[in-house]
Image (cartoon, rainbow, N blue to C red; front, side):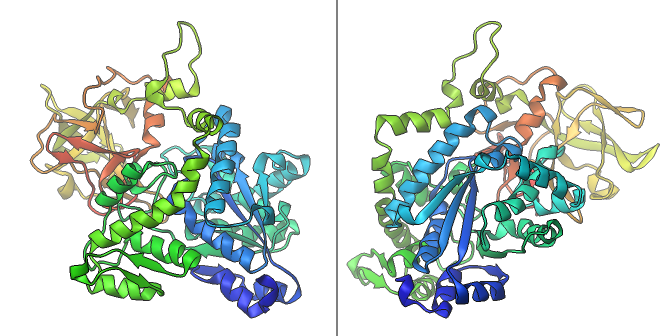
Length: 530
């Protein structure tokens, strides 16, 4: 097909359905002379899910346009991003990603012989690459590195140095893979602009950048490997697909943040050129759409019911997933899936004196070890030796209120703090802050950036001081008397504490709750909790 397309037609195919293109003029120049070289990279962290069909369908477009496409399995990036993939599991996860992504491509009819597959550590540990990392580190400021990774690298209260290296390595990949353009989600934009700014300083060419929109998940927020309810796994059984679609966010007539409509637009139409909606004959019967705009219009006007859209999506999704499920029925690939992503709940305790495995340690990190309670601020004033700190007395249902020092002065007024209900982590080791011992920590939603945004978490209305806060599914566990700072239990669990798109607090895919309902915050969607 590519031989029959002129450069303008190739550009249209390369850029269709993208949210943004940086360096389009350079793309046009290259296409006048030769075929475009593009790469897409994926960090081998959590299990790929159905949202990965969005970049897969664009890769199909690139190939139809005659592009030379490289797929990078970024194993080193997976480790650098707050150790999302333990070192000892890196190789297994690369193998899993390669198998499952090849199965996805085959299920949508993409010829694998037209693709080049590369593992990051095959070249990122070379002398030349390592020297370039040092050269780049001498130019990029801490501010620029942190800003570049803000939407991609896991944001925590005490970030690791590795997360600051991540954006620079992704920039260097463009040179070492010898491409004209990098393709990724629009959440990578700041990394792309860092690459455009700094690669020329190393004597390397500035590349173009192709950005997909972020497809909403089933809950209406970004589809995430770490948020179970937001995604459909590629190996989910048909009954699981039905169950998750039934719970999906899909309000009648609402086309905003609708993950189902986005999937139809960015995957099904580019692949098939049509979408069939299954309807009861009394509502007009089945209808085949040949343009996404018509589907969206009919849904907005409530001519397509959410139940019909979900049922039609179920049929289309299972057609895509069936070949992948079949491929992973082999004993070898079943074993690979289980060893690359071990189930912590099935990990046997290590023998006495034995060093626990990464999976075993994960099993020990139950969120029930955190003693989180509802507290009520009974008095608050500025810290006598620090205007940036509050000194608070907070009732947590004990004989005496706890003394707490918090850094909320810049974010919440004295009046707002007085008599406010908050969440307290009560079993951290007390810490002296400007001479006063803080006996607990107020938990807050936090978004790093300029400006930094912080809001205390809110317990359900009607909560009382001392009410226990637990993670759904971990109600019966007993908190540690005191968290051992050397074991970094809080730091390891905190990585997976965050707010959903509905401002509901989660640990991984489970809600933080009291007996009265979920914990929330007022406005900071998708924020981390610290």
